Structure formats: C-alpha cells, structure tokens
Picture 1: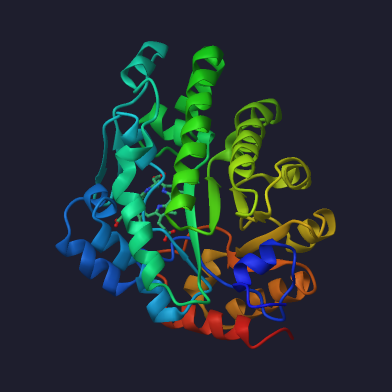
Picture 2: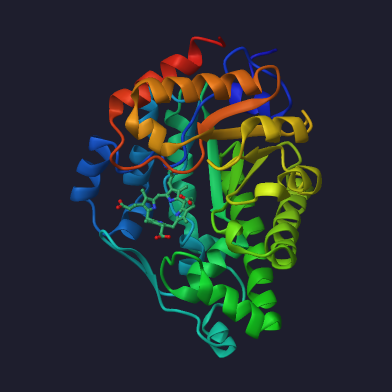
Length: 345
Ligand code: 1CP
C-alpha cells in the first residue's frame, strides 16, 4: 500500500480496511475554538483573508479530532469578490452581494480574473502545509460555476436559486458568458491553490439539484467537465472530488463523464444504489445525514454501520451528505470517528 496519505490512496483507487474520514464544514461554528477566534477577528471575509487566522481555523478540527484531511478555511464567494463584485457576510443572515439583475451588470465584473487578488489564500495554504501532520491530506476547493453564479445573480442565499434560473432562461448568452468566466477563474484559482500546496481539490456544486435535465447538462455537467479537464492538463497527479448536491439519477452519468477521481454523495442518495452503479475507479464520498450526527444515539450508530457495510471493498471516503450543523455535539463527532476507525462490522 505504500505510505501515501489514506485519502489520496483511496482517490487513486485503493481500498482501506477503515475509510479515511473528514467532514464538510469541519472548520466552523460547531467548534468552540472557532467561535472564540471569530469573535476576536473582524468580518468573515477579513477572517478568510488573514492567513494566520485562516490557517489556525483550518488546523483546529485536525488538532481536536485527527481527521484524515484538512480543508482550507475560506469560502466559495471569494471568487466573485476577486472579480470585483461587492461581497459581505452579515452575521446570522449569510452572504450579501450586489446582485446581477441584467446582462449589463456583467460589465461591472473584471474583464479577466486576477488570481493574485487572492494571494492571502495562498499564504494560508503555505502556513497550513508546514504545520500539518504527515498523514493528513490537504484539500483545496472552489464553488462550481453554477453554484457561484447563482449567488452572484441573486445577491444572497435563496431556497431554490430562482433568480439565476430565470436569468439563464431569459439571457442564455449572457449567462453562458458568466459561466465561462467562472470556469476559467476556477481552473486558475485551483491550479494556484495546488501550486501553493493543496494535494486534492473539491468542487462544490451545492445547488445543482434545482435544475431540470436540459439545464443540468449545460450549467452543471459541461462546466465541471471543463474544469476537471483544465486541471488534469496542468496537474494530472492531483485528485479531484466533485460534490454535486441533488445530482440524484444523474450520478452514474457524472461518474462516467466528469473525469473526477471522487464523487460526493449527498444525504438523499441511497449508498447501495450508488455503489451498484459507479465503477470502482471512482471513489465515493459520503454520506451520513448531518441531522443523524446531531441526534446521536442508536440511530447514528446504525447509519454509520450501514454506510460502512455498503462501501466495504470499494474506494470510499467517509463524510457527511452535506455540511456539519453548528448545533452538533462534539462528543457525537468523536464517537463517529471512533466507530469508523474500529473497522468494518
Ligand atoms: O462564521 C460564520 O458564521 C460564517 C459561516 C461560514 C463558514 C464557516 C460561511 C459563510 N462559510 C464558511 C466556510 C466555508 N464555506 C468552507 C470552509 C471549510 C470547511 O468546510 O470547513 C467551505 C468549504 C465553504 C463552502 C461554501 N460556502 C458553500 C459550499 C458548500 C456547502 O456547504 O454547500 C456554500 C454554498 C457557501 C456559501 C456560504 N458561505 C457562508 C454561508 C452561511 C453560506 C451559505 C449561504 C446560503 O445559501 O444561505
């Protein structure tokens, strides 16, 4: 098996007796040490752009729980910020951006993406890299074009991304230009994260599930394919994970067509259904219900065991089906890690 980090080995197609484990949003509000640091730091974006603090937050969950991977502390909305769109985060109510309401508003964005506007992020990566334990993998990320565009157009979180869906129907050419710009920015940004020291990258398409099939192909599949191909052209050796939330029945097709090394499964996917339809050369990541982790007890144990059983003998990364909830008790996280590492039952 060699001494490759477990997460990377699994993304190369190996299986492990106990799968590597990390949790989406593991650096965040369920941790008291995160809340303490955030209370002292400035705004959320300033926190993201202060390498000493962002590096510390990235390392907090590793110190406390010993996860198999650290994920860079940042946000998907630093890309619109670097493109010149005003972005802020109001405590409690999520992100606020100056919305893109008409094709004309696209002219407010920078002509080309200047990756060095995000240089504090790369300095954070450099700091984390030198402090990370030798067996812990380092994951970089960005938002997928559809998901990032949906916030850029609405200017805030919405239940169903209706503003972006309407914009794409009304102004398909202008929307395609925005998506293309985000494809190019994502490739440049992730390549730069890799140059700074991340070893794996994850693409978050949190809002893929709101699109009908024809739109899904145009705004989810095609842009993700371009990003994976663009990255593989530069760095074939760096594994890519795609988390396409709400992909549902599209999942086998994504496994076959994206060229990603790993696919994230959201909470709604039946693990067995996915395992039966995705070939073993694509690792599957997931997919414990974040609410089961919050609830704890017997239902948590049962769900952990059933996920472990289904993915036994195929490349699997243990994770949640979406981000960890801020109310999650710390003991439940310790219990999860212990149970996953005991091995399979
Ligand atoms: O301190 C705070 O109150 C801010 C909360 C917070 C945090 C901890 C936000 C605002 N972003 C983050 C960090 C973050 N965001 C990470 C860090 C690393 C980790 O996972 O530990 C990552 C990977 C993200 C990615 C992200 N941001 C996504 C995709 C993943 C997902 O959870 O679906 C999305 C959709 C965002 C936008 C965003 N940023 C923050 C919030 C509250 C939101 C959601 C907005 C909404 O739709 O209402």
